[in-house]
Length: 318
Image (cartoon, rainbow, N blue to C red; front, side, top):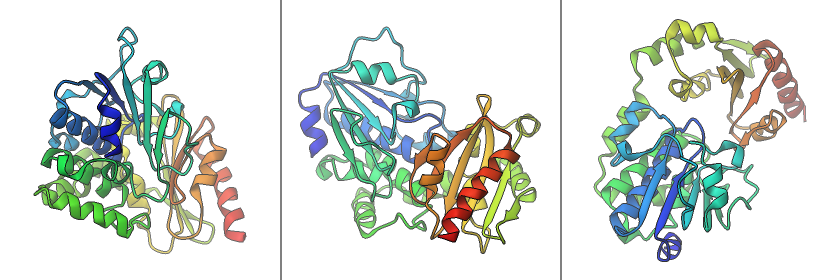
């Protein structure tokens, strides 16, 4: 309902997610976009999303997403920043739009969020996903099947199909409400979460084949070099789920995966029970959640892993 209070006075709206959008980012931004299109036909609304996996295009209106924001566009009445905890993470070159908009709203669930990015900030670090936060801000009677399928996809991806510790009773209340919209939940979970392209399968297999254990088997890590990326003709957007496969190695507490992006190495971190990877990611200019976070490094993968292992060991010792 709180979303409706913001929309009622807006004539123009822009929606942004974060760089290299994952399932929750795509689901939450497209969910909000569909909600506005369905219920507020007089509002001029645009959605801005960088390239995302082809499998997510089963979502309604996904083909209407713009890959980049044009600075010459007039300031909008209301700009949404979704699933994004910092201006540095805004995708589609949208920072100027956010800063120039008459009103702004941040909808997020990252523990690293400063809670003051926008004029309105709906941030719940206990929520499983931005989609979960968004669901409880909407009027349930106005949620269409199309909107519900977007939100379902986002929750599925950020909960690891409901197996991660971020899944809560409140998460399942949201899921129950979405299922009541007669969504095609089987297709969404199968085609966007459990399946991979042939190339993704090959590169994931290589990552697993070359992974190593550290700290008495408590850490598993692997990385790709620019040469590896070229050999498999793979792009960063196709690597979103590799870290979750690494995380499945039995007996490990932390999984580390590095891959090159824009001349640096993107660091993906996951933990199971003890280690706060958000604190570790903050050392590398990043953040996220207690059990899932990321950052960046300009050093070699080997040097970066050494530093990560020291930080992990500190937490394990304490």
